Amino acid sequence: MNPLSQLSDKKRAFLTGTLLLTGTGFACRVLGFFYRIFLSRTIGAEGLGLYNMIHPVFGICFALCASSIQTALSQYIASHMEKGRAVFRTGLGISLSLSFALAFLICRHAEFLAAQVLMEPRCASYLPIMGISVPFAALHACINGYYYGVQKAKVPAFSQVAEQVVRMSLVFLIASLWLSRGGVITVHLAVIGHLIGEMASAAFTLLCLWICPPQRYREPGLQIDGGLKIAGHTLSSGHPAASARTLPSGHPAASTAGPLMALALPLMGNRLVLNLLASAEAIWIPSRLQLSGLSGSDAFAIYGVLTGMALPFILFPSAITNSMAVLLLPSVAQAQAEGHKRRITASISMSLRYSLYMGILCVGIFTLFGSSLGTSVFHDSDAGHFIRILAWLCPFLYLATTMGSILNGLGRTRTTFLQNTTALLLRILFVLIGIPRFGIMAYLWGMLTSELLLALMHLWSLKKLVPFTWNAWEMIVKPAGILLISIGIFHFTGGVLPKILPLPLSAALPLPEHLPLFLTTTAQILLLSCCYGGLLLVFHFGRRR
Image 1 (cartoon, rainbow, N blue to C red):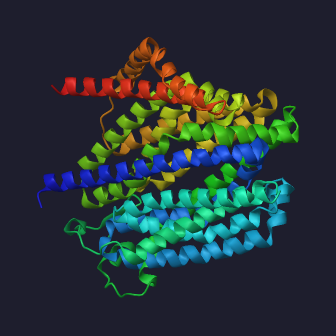
Image 2 (image 1 turned 30 degrees about the horizontal axis):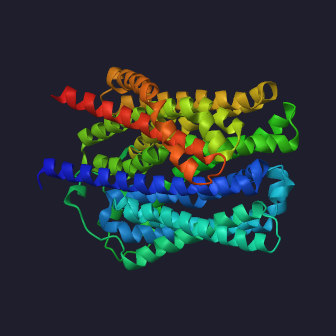
Image 3 (image 1 turned 60 degrees about the vertical axis):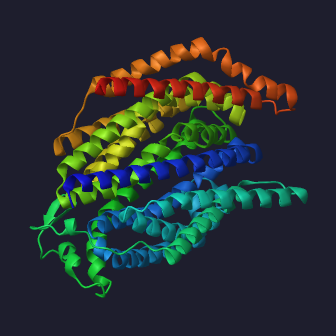
């Protein structure tokens, strides 16, 4: 095959997968917002805080038995297409074994974990339900890793939608039945919803694997003389990871377990440490808030507003960068295995440019409309205040996500681990020292500082590995200038048009109190986004001419 046409096919597959994951990601986030609004109205901000307190336990378990193996599967299968099914079975067996052991430990020691680890005894009744969801999450993650490895993103993409739809439908049904009988909705409903979602996504992906498994094929480009690069080292034909490529398909699973776990174990250790640090951060925030003068109830309420209301808005646009990151890792790993350095360079430049374009737009959107979004969606002014401050997080957050995935794809897992650890430790320092003196604002400052540091460290590491184009004028100054022009156009036209749009609806229908404000804000955001995107296209095509 002509290398140019092959590169075109790779690019087309990558863009198609990114668009698919982005579309379903946005759909899931829209559905998730409705779900979070429902939870905020039923269990309240303090309930959201308690619900988010138990997630560190799930996160640690997921890091041990699922996420690291999923990443290893996608990376290994991308470079060993002919061994995909055997590697998947091995990874699935290891992942499920670990997940059942962890689920048992959580259920057996729920009271100890709640009182001694989470430092909140009220979480004890929620942990067993969360523990049961771990094996389902592991099954879902491994199947997704298989499909990502062969660069077939449809099943993982639509599994997200299935998870949200089934979770919301059943939770709303359970809530309506419970309320009709005079019951009171508590945090238990949110935890049951989490379990339902994991069961739904696992069932969907398992059904897809049975009906339409990934095609088994061999790509000539994967046969490389002199060995294969994994985790930054060239493997000779005598290395177990390299020899696995030449073994017959019926060879025992032991032949694939070694090279797969050689990739998974460093990731597992890295993510375990990172999740432990993130869990410590989540556990310490409410206790440090109490040292700043807040009551226990107020501390959990502030924590719930931040993590359950404000941060989801900031993370909403990251559906695009997360989709890019998921597909970049196997794509870059395959490009490295095939020796296509120019394709890696192109991936870095493209990801860098579009992450900054989107991050700069989000700064404008959330600083201008953060207060309106917090008030209209969650009926909470604190949420709007947090959104406006965290808006400046967007460019660095999106950059760190995509650049970190490329580093992992190049085998630099140790580098990403050390840099993520440094950023987390800096944030924890703000939690321990800053929150007792300055309250929750110290944590917001810590988030901004740590994400800026992390993005810069990732870029510096990539620049040393692969030469790529970095044009500050094109990637920062130009989009920032276009944003300012777009804001000027918005203030010229947006003061009239968006305010008129909801009026006919308000006059004709008995709308809820905050819905007109939400409709107005949505129209204004769309207008600003269209101006920004349109001007970017004009400048882009004008420069090409």
